[in-house]
Length: 109
Length: 153
Image (cartoon, rainbow over all chains, first blue to last red):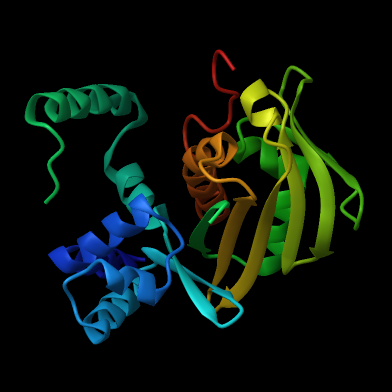
């Protein structure tokens, strides 16, 4: 399973791929064309990043007719969180994250 | 598009037969699915109910398609929250596919409605349940916090 975890961290290590995940979080189930329309990346680059995200299981692909729809798959991130965060810490961590968000404003990186 | 849908995929070290059993037999499901019990005859057209431990119906629907150990499609209406009940039936699909030593489980939950409260609710709940299912099959133990019904619901 550690090879799979490596894939997840590698996939998340590129800002372009995090932007793609943000796009899917905002509007789940997009085609390649829809994703490309709002991004300053070539179609080839988006395809390459999507493939890496799919290999890491961070993006799930569903075929509908001739279209391929891309969905954000949170399972690998959830499994990583389960590994290091105790369930009793979760409430406090969420409260701290909320506080940080409120004081700093929404901040993506 | 007037639709809300999510697709969750998890890979579990098990066989399709064992995963199917874990998804359908009460002795397994109550361990990772917050002590709920599914009432269903598991055949096409059969009614399906997800019962809370106190006997209330949490969600209910029908078996649309069943192909053990590969695919299950249910219609699914929430019965606990009026605003979700009002949205009517959603559709939940499990697809199981053997991949080497693991099984790829794909869960799709859809409703023909944008910004669905039901989909938002179940989308938040499924990661915990699926992670616990994976833990149960791979280690014999579900995750803490998934074997009891949440307080106050």
